[in-house]
Image 1 (tube, rainbow, N blue to C red):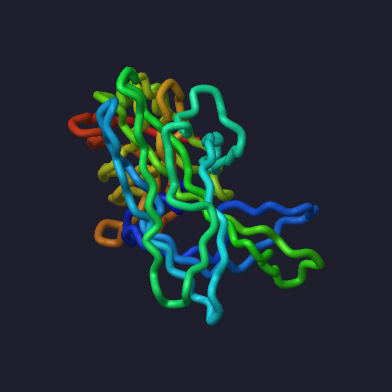
Image 2 (cartoon, helix red, strand yellow):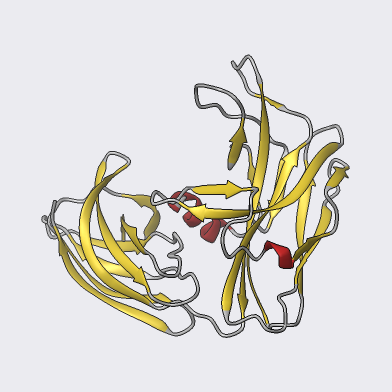
Length: 275
């Protein structure tokens, strides 16, 4: 998820999903299936006052040579500690999906002609300040065949939606640091606590100097931190001028600077990391 979030921020809202966000099948081994659908944007961050409505559009582009048949619905979701997402068709406690309306539940899309799919959110007039979170799920009506698999897979995409109802905001603070193994590599991690009533993300670059005295640029992963949770946020080191290529760190590393969050939030960071 953290890699996906970095990709989305650097490459804009439109992207093509050939690898599934979610796969539903009775299989005993992981599999990948082709899903010929482009979605734009993959995420919404909206705001609305209680008693009013907010409307938005998801642009769906089917790229196969034949028309594509899809089912659409809403779902609740939760974020795992590793940044992956669990979708739920059942209403979770405090779900705001009863406020959500989608224009239709089945759709046929002509190849090469984007379809503008509409949805709206209408919180009741007496709704206290809260962050409404749900997903719009797009599922292929025909099972997608995965190479080498004896069964077909049901492929679906979840478009994540955040809606700030009234005055809500994250409040992020540094709760600790660590060095953890991520993708087989020791990685500096910030433990970030969110005491606010909306999700937040860290943004910006820090300065780093490793054990060899090499100067590095350090960027925080853009994984969301949900209200009331403390989440590990990985720091990725790159060479100055090349923020696309992560480099291995020679520990210890000293990191300093400031990261931004929310509208006006700022978090100073001056830490030394060692395994």
